[in-house]
Length: 107
Image 1 (cartoon, rainbow, N blue to C red):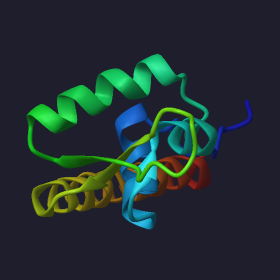
Image 2 (spheres, rainbow, N blue to C red):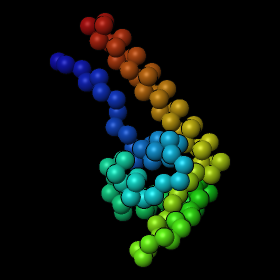
Image 3 (cartoon, rainbow, N blue to C red):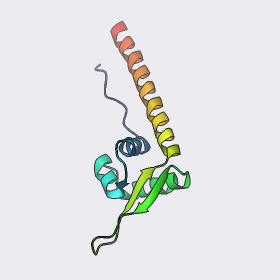
Image 4 (tube, one colour):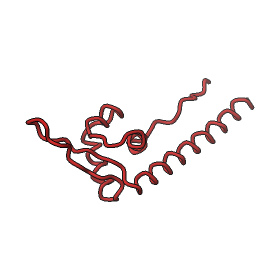
């Protein structure tokens, strides 16, 4: 039987964390495009992250007639949280991959 060596699927919160850490201010639309998550899911996550004090919200300066977009940025607490979350998930993934390889080589 073939082993699946693919990395475990990213949770929505990890996908958001990766995008936030690699960008400064980012809009909900940009995150939808980058992560493939629907806008309603990102909106709910934003509300929770804002309540926890992990993100700041600011309106884009209005240069056109359209409604200004909201831009989001991680706070210091948010940066610490996402860095620790991603470090923990990477260490779990590498340790589980090592166990699977050892099992495969032992067969």
